[in-house]
Length: 463
Ligand code: LFR
Image (cartoon, rainbow, N blue to C red):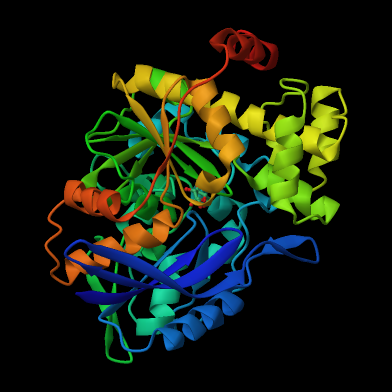
């Protein structure tokens, strides 16, 4: 039996979990949970990195003696260190507007086709590449770039490196050669010296107070997909949280012109797998509605949404106006030209619109990868949202299996346990253990597919 501590930082909350893994045992105990989110300081959105560090230490202290520790977090964001290892400035939040217009600027220097053929990444303004170009001035004094989990691991251990799954989200990583694209960095004025050596999930980074600190899939989505309780490869997944990551697991990247035009990403997974997916805007829009309303009674809002009329107001959740923090109910009204009649109607609009986006994304993913799927696994916090799960099954015309909820923490714990010698040789073995230890909820498609066809053409036309 192994006892490990998993630090799992999402964009809206972080937690430290104690994991116990053994023969037919996979258990998590939450040690602490803390707020996370954007903090506006004189017009720039930051993460509160020292609050995260301190909360992580509190959780690790509560864990007591463990066999190892590992960290995963959201992707793309980073801190810069100077030559003496000091942090240069507070890490900036990927939703900050410093990247406005930067994508277009970069595309005047390197074509979208070339970028995609090297990195295989979805074009999103949040990508590390665009953030770095936006702060090119500061790079002259920087010695090292550390993604968030790598920065926290450095503070714990003093060791510097970049875990591979998260490195693959920067748009500076060559997905075929499986190494940093130094050429691309240099072409865009990013000094190659800032790109550290790469760690594999399972490598030992160093130690903290005598306890090994292990690299896992340090990108939270990489860890989440490890714990998809699939029994064969004909599955799709939605890792459902602040973002919805919607796609397939493949052995090799799909770098075709069609995949680029459909804006699909090829992120690196644990054991060399590829996460072929799209970022859909996710529950962020609903979280922002609740923040604006100052209403944290989600069960009531969901009950009102369930009772609200279907397909009254619809949006494309991936429209750029929904990326930055703000008054989402007002933005929904401005976008659609219609004001939803009540809070329940706003929530219904968000959930139906997400389900529509999932439907389009999954259909396209299957076509692009030539991989038919029989089942859709919804994992992460959003898997508890029963209305969204049912709408997802209805829209996608696929049976949905919902759970586990703490998907990223489970993937983190499983990869640590394997590194410590538990007999979990491959992803299939890890997934079998999740399946035999966690209860899943199933949803069968209901309603008329023609209603979803009509809704889709209302929002997307012939797009
Ligand atoms: C999910 C996630 C996504 C990434 C986004 C921004 O938490 O890591 O995979 O695209 O956050 O980092």
